[in-house]
Length: 123
Image (tube, rainbow, N blue to C red; front, side, top):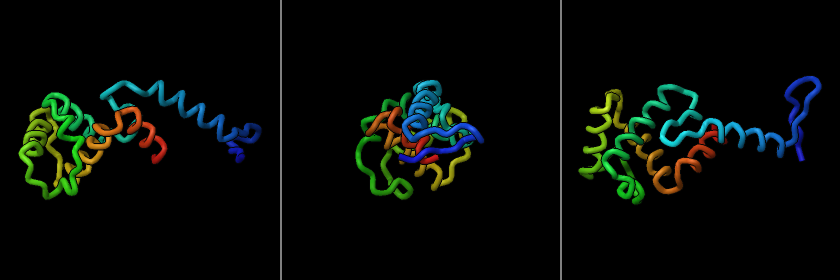
């Protein structure tokens, strides 16, 4: 087992680090708020997308496999895009919209708590 030195006289094991991360996760988790995403712009685009899909009740649509969001012509995607703009976010490019939808697809399939764990681990 590896220990991680975090100061001159304090070392934490991987187990202790996992316990600390879980406490941080519990503290930062409020469904639909994405407070664990530290970058404000990233948090904003995911939250607007989340709110749009939630208000439109399109979570079942988001669960289905999509090979490509960027060039997809499903009417649901236009509806989601328009709702995001109606809610106040107008800065999407094709890429950022597709990226956001991929995040929402993961949330729809695995749940937001699993998304949060993956996000914190990756970032």
